[in-house]
Image (cartoon, rainbow, N blue to C red; front, side):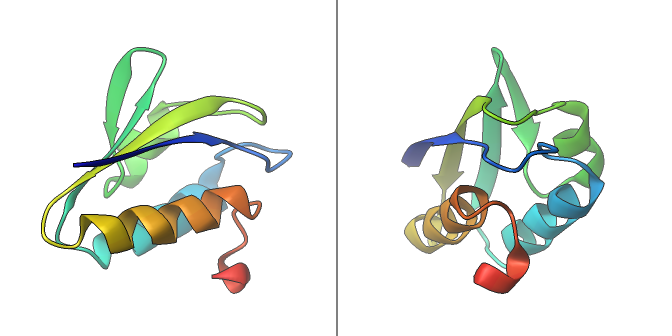
Length: 90
């Protein structure tokens, strides 16, 4: 399992568009991808699950990836979140 602690930098947090983009990236990988935030776990491949986390700017979350392509998945999602959640930066 690969685990990374990330801080959301986007001014609007993980709102609809970046949540959709994050799910799209997560769906590219076979690994189980989970976001832990405020003692809860959210499925990164589910838009409703990600939106229900209510992640705001400066919030810290933990990304967990487990599976055959966990390192690549963790790198792609970490890069997306750390670069302001602009999919064009991937």
